[in-house]
Image 1 (cartoon, one colour):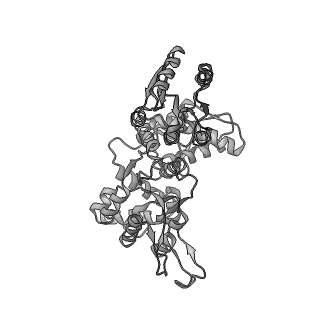
Image 2 (cartoon, rainbow, N blue to C red):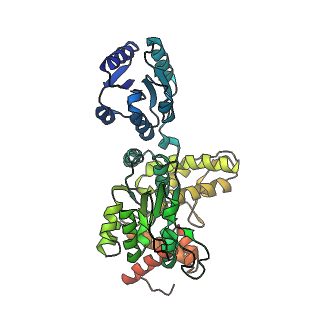
Image 3 (cartoon, rainbow, N blue to C red):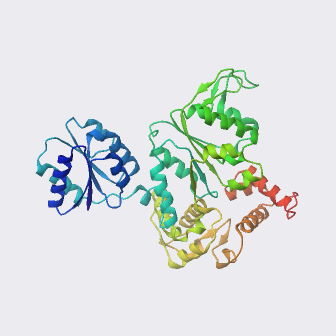
Length: 432
């Protein structure tokens, strides 16, 4: 296994390189911090030896690549190195057998899995793995992140992961679903208000940006807000200052912003519904999360993960998926993406009496059993699939938009906007 070494003292690097070579391993020596950071990678490098002159490198490496075991060396106490992520500290001058014993123990220990493998993210898809690599690299930075993807693809999961692995992880994580709050209340929710600012403002209240001071704020479904509020939001992002409703003074706030949308933002900008300057302010690190139907290799691994999760939560035995059940899951179009998959697996776990989940216990939508025709015909556009799903859902609930929005996993505002879009196409009458 290649073992990376970083120390300003070339003689120390040479001695460690010789020791590592004697152990039958491959040394990757560096005296330059920049060259080390450009080369370090968790795939070849399971272990890194880093001098305490580079405490920032120890911290950054552990945050970006938590699976790499770090052995710190130096002439101090080692407390700072251990605090920021090193698993061992050796004080110089150390004996050859001391470093060899530590390296031997680490080499023979089971190698840690990346947190994406069995944590928040389960994927076998090559495209999704590239996205996860970007998330790993971006997490420790302060850069704004703009996440695009359909509802249910895991945008908020990514936002939480970015915060957990950032330098702001000790600070607050504050999320607000902008589509779920009426325009008339959004400004006070975001920026807060002073006592007496309006009828019912009996006390001063902090807004979401103040609550997120020192941490991360998630602006979920940002494309749903009005152009007027977009202008105010742009000012806050630029100046890092907010004005409470009814207040004449400004308040400085320190936050990292993560924004999401389930719309095609380029279309929103082109049609004048989203400000171009706000988009560029948010879109420093763009992430597009593919829908589940575009990564069908993830469907079964995700299903097995949800089976384990639900079994633990409900204190029930894990169940097996028959091959026919796996095929049925792969054949479905998953308009609700990962969120819908989890719901379907939970329903199947509850309805299945035996140890195996068969296709007859897999029910998509409200009450439809799995069937080959559940998959859309080849050549069907995503727009047509979305429209058919919305219409069929409205039919099932007798036109009740609140129930339909809940079933579809979208806000009532999003549903209303979709129906208005279909009206403009001349294919829908607003009588539903």
